[in-house]
Length: 345
Ligand code: CUA
Image 1 (cartoon, rainbow, N blue to C red):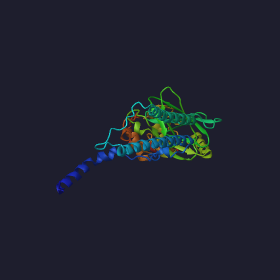
Image 2 (cartoon, rainbow, N blue to C red):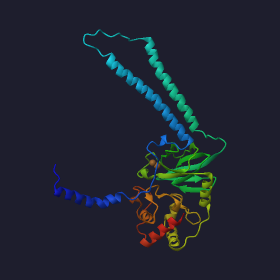
Image 3 (tube, helix red, strand yellow):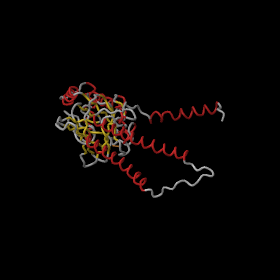
Image 4 (tube, helix red, strand yellow):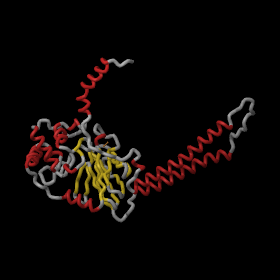
């Protein structure tokens, strides 16, 4: 096929016509990093190290079997192939010694694999330092994560802060359908089932920011059910808690205007902002939304511009999202609302 100028121009014209929809289909996204694809092999907690160790043990056992079996096949092919004029090979059917051997070897391998797996499961499924655990409730909703700290009175969304040096007892629950809670570098995967309180224990040692998400298909916006885990030293964590619990600072200027818009619209039916009359519990708590990493559980960056677009038409960023759009708000109101929400640091 020869490329003529006409063909090139036609292709460019098609691309030009499609461009607006390509741009719309790819709105800006915030950064979210679940670690390398082999994250469970780059562990950052005692529990993930156990899982990683178990993986290596199984890989080595499997590797030895693989090399042994393929080696035996290759040797057999070359050494025992029938040759023209050769005699009939020795028949070993019913050889009791061999029958016992090749029944016993797999049984021993499976017994070892079973014992090692049970040992690591026990390590992971119980708190390592039994003396004290710290409760965090992780509740999956279509399509966002709620995090509650009952002992502190803190509620947040799509961003979980975790102190190092203490065993965390996650209570993984669901508000609707089955989700799956996983932070690949930090802890194992566990289902969030309606009506159940699934426990995960994990103790973290490396402060940092880690990507987490829902890992079980739970409806249209399943892919936008991401969150961030911020692992902090106890001192940093205490500062964060203090900030979360601080009394509301009344907004001023454009932000004050935005608060009025928020409180006069149906936003309050679903969202709560501590210190105001907004007490909805259907959607994410927005008390400190301006300090979080993203909007819509990772669907949109946290900027005034994206927040305006999000409020006017959330499905642009997150098809299937349950939040209704507010395209009827004036540009001025939308802007004030976005400025107000961003100010909630
Ligand atoms: Cu929640 Cu997938």
